[in-house]
Amino acid sequence: MEIRTVLHMFDPMPHVSPFDINMAVDAGFDAIFPYPNVTLEQVHGLVQDAIFSRGPSGVKRTGLFIGGRDLGLALSMLEAARKAMVPPFEISVLADPSGGFTTAAALVACVEKQLAEKHGLTLEGQHAIVFGGTGPVGIATGVIASLAGADVTLVDPFNIDTALEKAKEYNARCGSRLKGTYASSDADKARLIAHADLVFCTAKAGIQVLNADVLGDATQLKVAGDVNAVPPLGIEGIKAKHCGEPLQHAVHAPGAVGIGALAVGDVKYKLQNALLRYLLSSEKPVFLDFREAFQRARELV
Ligand SMILES: NC(=O)c1ccc[n+]([C@@H]2O[C@H](COP(=O)([O-])OP(=O)(O)OC[C@H]3O[C@@H](n4cnc5c(N)ncnc54)[C@H](OP(=O)(O)O)[C@@H]3O)[C@@H](O)[C@H]2O)c1
Image (cartoon, rainbow, N blue to C red):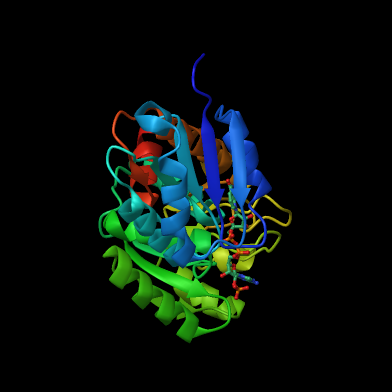
């Protein structure tokens, strides 16, 4: 009988995300075990408890998923898991806290594709702003776009210190070159959007961040992407299914196009599914984060 596949799901939060459990089921794992409230210090012991029981062929049928809402903690847990392996007893690991790595990778890949198709440009040197930029999806979006060559500013809705701290923390951790600022009013947003080539909207669900008036201040905007699928959507005029439709309210930015949450979500679903399956299909153990996610997302779009 073939050895059954197992996914252990570590999460520092009180609940493992039902979204991620559904994704693990859809990826075909036979048995899925959620572990809530896992601390960084516990990862080493838990991993070593998971790797020895099934023999060298069993480890290839065993995977580990790391969730939570804190990207830095998830990256530290991924590293702790990697260090806990004892070859040949090694299992593959995917970190995707708050869906941040796969959602951000899908968003940036979709924007990059529209930028190339509609404007003949790459991300290199593009001025990008990330609204909701201090949340998990926003930080991952900023890091991925920055590492791909864009000049990225994370925007916090209330506090410049939060934005500057997050930018500093993730630049040190990931090698990105993020900047930080805040925008608490439409006037602040208009000031930022006037000089943006790209807008990523990764704010809390159900909040309209950019209205038609603010979009009227865009002059060099080329592509805007929104990941909020809960009405009201994040950017007025971008519908959830839009994928390269003209951004109707950006009247002074000819050629600007929009990407909506369901278009991004379609890529995100395929991407997370592919990464979960890769945990089992890879010959050698793999340790996957936003880097692998973006590489795969580029292939998918
Ligand atoms: N399409 C997809 O496939 C997909 C997949 C996953 C997630 N999502 C969406 O991605 C978005 C981001 O997820 P997340 O987990 O990072 O969200 P989150 O943590 O709930 O919020 C993201 C950021 O939005 C900020 N924010 C709150 N109120 C705001 C306002 N009025 N204006 C601008 N920003 C505001 C938050 O700031 P504070 O922390 O200060 O409140 C936070 O930094 C959500 O809309 C989520 O539904 C989409």
